[in-house]
Image 1 (cartoon, rainbow, N blue to C red):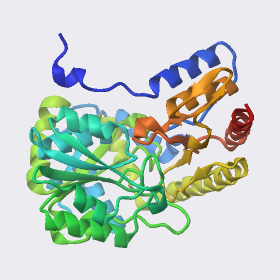
Image 2 (image 1 turned 45 degrees about the horizontal axis):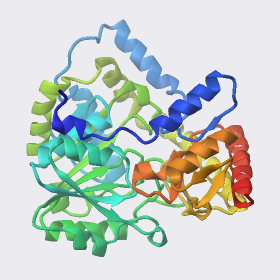
Image 3 (image 1 turned 180 degrees about the vertical axis):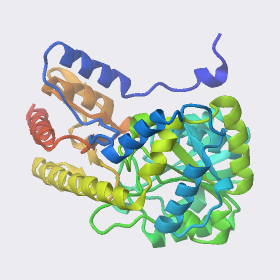
Length: 398
C-alpha cells in the first residue's frame, strides 16, 4: 500500500502529450517539440576536459556529503562576483541537482501544516515538494498586466498566521518574467515585516535579455540574507543538465540541517561532476560560453515573439529563461477535427494532430496559456510556429 503522502503527489500533466508525441515520431510522423526544458547546446569542452581529468587522476571516490571544498569556494566566489553576496563555504551545500536542493531546503524550513506562498504561474514541481514536506501551498494568481509577477500588496494579502515561507523564481519558468530590483526590494520588505523565510530559485539568473538584470532578494538586506535560501545549479547556465549538480547558499543553521539530511538521503553529488563544476565556474571561460548561448537564445526569443505576433497570439515579452508563455484561450469553446478545445491540455492534444508539441499551461497553474521553449533550433522554431499558425487558423475558421 502506497503511503498517503506519496500517493497525493500528482503526475505531470505533460506526460500524456510527451508520450503521444514520442509515439508519433516513432511511427514516422514529423513532430516539432516546444517542450525543451534544457539548453540545446552541448556542455562546453573546457568542462568536459575537466571531467576527463577527474577520471584520469582517480577522483572517483566519495566526497563530503555537503560537497567538495574546492567547489564550495568557487561558488562563494561566484556569489561575490555576480551577486555582491559574501558566503562562507560552510553555508554552501552541493546536491545532485537543483531539484534535490529545493526539496531539502523546503524540508529544512517547513513544518507540518505550515503555509508556503507561491506565485502562479509556477514551476510544477514546487507544490509537490511542499506537499511532500507536509506543508500547504498558498497560490497567488498573478496578472498578465503585471507581467505575471506578484506584487508586494498581493504577497502581503496572502500572509496568515501559518505562513512560514515564500518561494520566488526569477527569472521565471514558465513565463520568462524577471523581477526588477525595485520589485524585489518591495517583496523583501514584506517578508521582513512578517518574519518569513524566502526560497529563491535563481537557476536561470544568467539567461536574461533586453537590458534586464538579475537581482537576488538575499542582497536587499542583512535580514534577508539570513532568511533566504538561494537555490542554483550548473544545469541551465553551463548546459550541464545531465551532470546533476545543484547547490544552495543558506544561513548556517539551514545549511547544516540540509547537509545532515542529505547525508542520509542522497549522500554526495557525483564526484566527477563536482570536479568539472569547479572548472565550469572559472570566470573567463564561463563568461565566453554564457555570452554565446545568451546571444543565440535572444535571437530565437525575438524571432519567436515576431512569429507569435504575426499569428495574432497574446504573450508577455519574456525577459529571462528560454520560454514564452502564450495565451491561447481565444480558441477555447471551439473544436478541431471534432475534438472540443476547452483548456490548455485539450489545446496541446489537438495541436499534436498538426505535428506540434506544446506544454499546457494547466501544469503551471494557468489554464489559459501554453509554454513554448526556444531552447530549440531556429529552423524547428520556424517550422513549428508555421504549423501552430495553421492550427490556430483552422480552429478559428471551424
